[in-house]
Amino acid sequence: MQQPELGQQLATLRKQQNLTQEELVEKSNVSVRTIQRIEAGEVIPRLSTVKILWRALGTEYTTPTKNDIYMKPSLNQHNHQQHLIIAVVSGVIYIAFELALTVIDLSWLVGNREFRESSQTAYIALTAGMALSYALFASGFILLAKLFENHLLTIAAILMMIAVAATGVIDVAMFNAPWEELSLPYAILAVGVGACSLIFGIALLRLQDSMGGLAKVAGILEITIGAALISVLLFFIAFTLLIPAIVIELLVLYKGYEYLSRSAPQSA
Image (cartoon, rainbow, N blue to C red; front, top):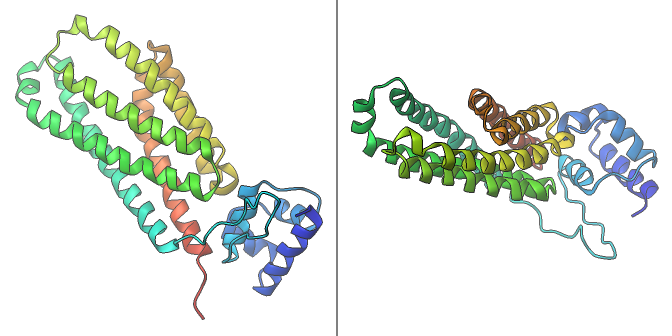
């Protein structure tokens, strides 16, 4: 579909629902300038932007093209909303597990080795819970990637799941190892996790059109964390920013939930 026809179709759908351009902005998080330019036929918007607008209007963009790339079944809004809520709750649980594990690790750093050794069973259980809760949390971003055609985000979320699981495995394996044996495996781990964080951050930045400034902040934080970990020497910056980054990412997921709530067709 050429841009004038696309713009006319958007304007018609919007007017059929008695929505102003500003009201469509509220439902879609697409800027009013972008909507104006699409309706005026001045730009060819990205497919993800088109789908966001159509879903905000309670329908799917199903105009056939040569490759039939727009013909997809309607989304199951309720299931997707539940998925995102589970991801948000799992993210909160992940933070709790991470804080508990940090307490045990710090006890070792300050010389309280007896407390650490007595906590080994709890440490293993907490580590398993951390990996599982993060996987459920990251699955929310895989859903957002599907909704907003962000294929890099799918890859990044899967890589982050693997990175967190690998961190847990190494933490448990090295639990009783002497300090001098930790530097090499953790340096390698830091570089690997940092690379995954960089990719995740870039993917989050691509959500700006749909999720707005929150996605941008989350992306910047993840890129900063990734760069700090890759440097190895600045790893402490990554640990400082970890919880704030997860909190912002939780808000991004919740905003995705709100988006689905707004774009769901309303009953008469």
